[in-house]
Amino acid sequence: MTLPRYTRGPVPRSAACALAFATLLASAAPAPAQVPARSADPAVRGIPRSAFPRLVPLAPGVYGYEEIRAPGFTTVSLVVVGDSGVLIADGQGSPSATQRLLDEIRTVTARPVRWYVVGSDHGDHTAGNSVLPPGVTWIVHPNSQRQLQQDAVAADAANARTGSSAAGATPSPPRLVVVPPQAMTGDREQVDVGGRVVEVRFLGRAHTGGDLMVHLPGEKLLFMSEAYLNRVFPAMRSAYPAEWVTVLDRALAMDVTRFVPGHGFIETPRVSREELVAFREALRAVIAEVTRLHARGLSADAAVREADWGSYRDWFLAEQQGPIAVRRVYQALDGSLPRDTR
Ligand SMILES: [Zn+2]
Image (cartoon, rainbow, N blue to C red; front, top):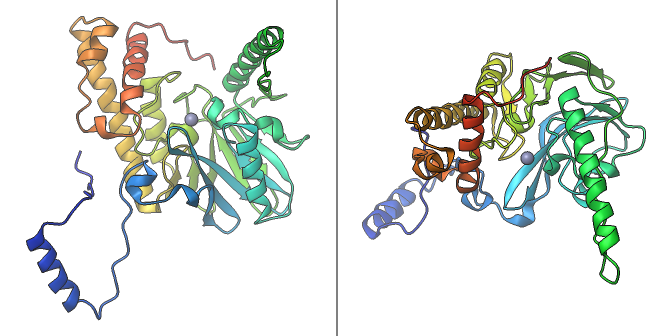
């Protein structure tokens, strides 16, 4: 992969002298705009923790919301303000984090939050859903609704266990998984938020199996939730690897100029497309490497040890997500992933 990399560290003395001279010559010219590093790591991009959370204006009344979660990368929500109310796609990972998102929305509009799209059903995007306003209209894919139902049962059981064993100890707060009351019946749903139409799209199974995206045709913008992880190693715990690549091809073929990720930074339109292509290539490379090891007859454990991710080993979370990707692609190759039941 040949995307630019930006090195940090001391400048050699001869280069420093040349740089000083060049600076002297160029002192009358305006300073060139800072180009952000291609990384999901705020430190590499030079952004302090105190800058988060932040609303990133994308178009009039449209914002991305970047908040930092452990282990130090951004989780992105989308906020669309219509004349009749506000639509949110994806929440954050705890009630307090999602409350903070709601508080930030109050700084740009007094209109009520009326629609909530489950882009990803994973906890880092849904565990704060209990603070959403009552009466909010849910837009969720049936696969994600089913997953949230299972999560709610598991959370109830865990809460019951904690409750019964907590005599004398400080009980931890119960985990509350909200199950959306209804799910989409097709692959596309239009929401009239007042003054603009928002399209919710299911382009196929990708990161979770119920991946929803929000398309703003007027703004040529696509919020992709976790189907697009910007400079984050492909996270495949519940993914459908080959179908995910197809989903990205479909997204790239849409009339869209700006692609917004679910993790990693929101980029300028041109860079957002370059990075989505780079992410698709990362997915392809990971699948190809695991397929190579599988064809050699290695066990999944051996493949975890042998896998060579090339330049992707520098992507965020590679060490943690690499072994998970190996096991998931093995499941796919062995035919043990759930079938697409649509
Ligand atoms: Zn996530």
